[in-house]
Length: 351
Image 1 (cartoon, rainbow, N blue to C red):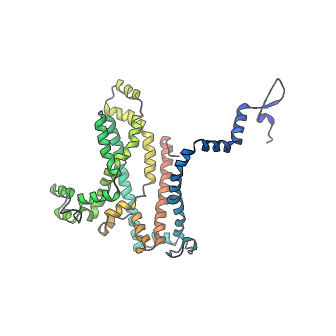
Image 2 (cartoon, helix red, strand yellow):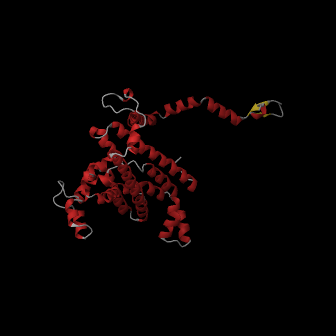
Image 3 (cartoon, rainbow, N blue to C red):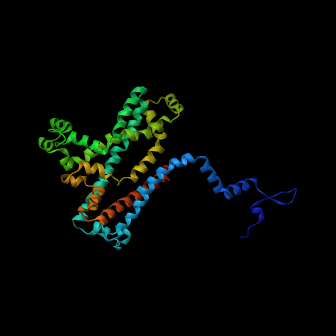
């Protein structure tokens, strides 16, 4: 189709000539001098961009440069030669993990199952707790009481993983950190919920209790800190919404159901999508500090599986890199799927 002047210019009836549209002239000028405007903005707010540099360096050195080592999934594992000089091995590591049927493949499938179950239980039981806490904080009328309770629930998040796992070990396990049974073990044994033999052996030495200990300690550690986002969304709700609900005769529970929850639904959806994205990304630090060979059957996850093999005590760096690669690819697919479902179901999505 042949372009005409009338498609881009406005015709002036008085002068009989075509003139450029003022709005189009502004858009053309902005597009023509785009980089000049960007440069002026950077010079004007150079302090803010200078503060951005450390974060960019962190992402560069700890997020992007390590991606180069992912080539180890497809190279012959060699601790002497760099990855660039290693021979290409194709998908041999992935085939061994998935289809070999040997002890290594069995351990990987067990680790993948444990990773999914721990994350799934955390999603089912751990994700609602910050929302419940935020609803509770919103109903506390005393600012002093609310502040004290919030600080107490935030504190565990600021403890190191070593300190937190040491406290858990002291509470539930008989070992070098405690004399005799822990407080929790004694309580459960006294209530008849577990036998004296199990309590004496230590709950962390029993595979049947590892997942429960992991989830309860995880809720204790992060529920209060994660509630900040939801509490901020709740306090942003207009008071007129509560007043309208009260005029209609809604009590506190009805206000939560018909005012608070619908108002923070978009925040819940966004947080849920991000949580699903990390469904298979369980940090190895906490598991590594809590588990032992007796609980591998329920405690070993992909990260600890890759750690043991990547440290030279197992099958090698190639197997470890392949295991982590599969874990991350599955996590990416979960993010895309959850985001697509959320966008179609509620018109709220992460991107």
